[in-house]
Length: 366
Image 1 (cartoon, rainbow, N blue to C red):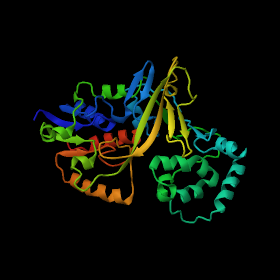
Image 2: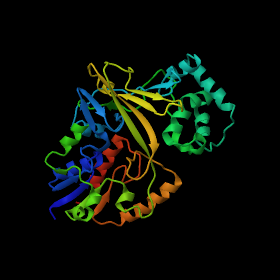
Image 3: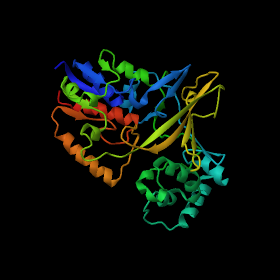
Image 4: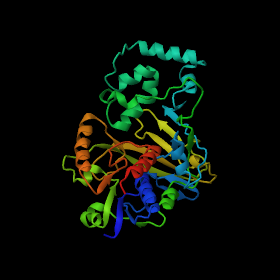
């Protein structure tokens, strides 16, 4: 065997594992089925603008160890995510805060806003929410639900809000302050020069093969190393023998516009159901760059099928039971390890991926 470790996938989880194992003196091969590194955090330069090819990635964490770790590979700017919601041409601040409440109702004090929300909640007498619609109304009332949640959520998941489980919005951010900062985390920002450079630096001195799909030459690749770290879909690894785990997917429509500023904000959500995309990303605002052109991306949710990019796991009882079956198979493996969002069938923010990968390496019996 030529390598100590074969790592399948060059996203954050796989690349961190490769970097840390390489530091310990192990011989590593990373294989990546796409024609580029970095998985879904891949950014591509367009004449001075770093385009987030697989959706907006905004780094945020309260974990100083994670923040210090990722800052070894890039300098981060001070970008703060303050999205805008567009509902039938009217604009509202997100997350739900005093600016939003003033725009909706003209209220100016936290007490006025609180009483307005409580007044709307009481009309429905919801004691135990049975679905997402009831959960949302029981948390923030009818107006915010109908204007800022209902259409967006139904587009995102491809199902009516009354058919979605309530836990999806258990942690709706609601603030009674004039604060448009979407995240509460202490550390936030975007790497100056994009995310791809981070992965390139992590994989320096490591053998990497792009355009290499494990499943086109599975046994030969698995036999090329003593141990394997697999970050792809766990159900695909086992040939979907119990069936396919379900996801929601996305379609990205990119447009280059010959003007310096299209929408004045990095993220604008379109919350009415009749507009088919959920949001428009204007990439230059992540980096505060000055260019004569701009690049926007319209983001369309779509049904997922095998072969499509998998973005959001459908974490219902059916899929939880199915994943458990695949996890039982994985737990029996002696030389193959599974990690990352697809292998664990879990929605991971970037800081959670980093933390998980570092803990995985710490616990690995080398």
